[in-house]
Length: 380
Image (tube, rainbow, N blue to C red; front, side, top):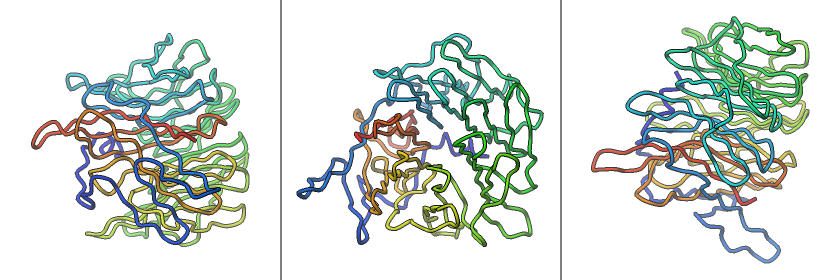
């Protein structure tokens, strides 16, 4: 179950350098924590600065983020207080991040997914031991709990929202909600959907993996054409798709991991669909298990996730004009930090800047550490 990895204190012995360093291949630019000096006529790589860190309890994490422009964003996750989980919704008002104080926010143990059509059309999904699964909608003034479909999940769900419609994906079905009515498409046994993205009510993608005892595993990519979900996965691929970014009707990007091999780290892959077929565009991307991808809709793509090493800052990769650039995230001040993990990325409207959310570890003793929420923003 995915929630087991969310609240980990990551001790991964793949790299031990204080800052993650990725050797660049031809055409790549490797950057440190600060932007390197630029050659004449060449723009420096953007920096990532910490916007919020360590304000929640000492066992907290953020799992998803949605932006409705530079002055409105929502990040969701969990914090533990006296051993009891408490769902968290943070709101960005253009100046600061604060816990959501709008009326009607349901109480739950975890807020797991969020998406925003606009500042007055926001959806969030979560669950708790006492009240089960919860879907809530924000109309710009207050939050309202929305009835769930009959085909519920078990904490795996992601959601995607467009004007007039929202999709909620569980480990049993792909559900859509429009005009007060739920429709469900059951999933084949062995299929687990890890992400869903929607551009319009007639164009959406769901990605994941098929794994069943005695049968070969394979990647799963399903496309919604307005009437049904159709298989659009690369033929014969055994990659595990982890995240998706839908740039346009004929441009879709995905992150994936190579199959697990004992004593070897899984490698990140970046795939691009050009409207006809999938292509491997990974290039020099490395140093992390990628599970987050987004872009600006103009050809720039960002990738991040969980770095191999337990020391060092968050690691981001940017693709622009066919060139991959590695960029180190900001180090959180105030102690020895480790295990930076980015769970989700989102653009801040059309500003050219981007948000990331996740968690970081703080060493508190000889053999103890604490985990805190993390939000970073790129300079452009």
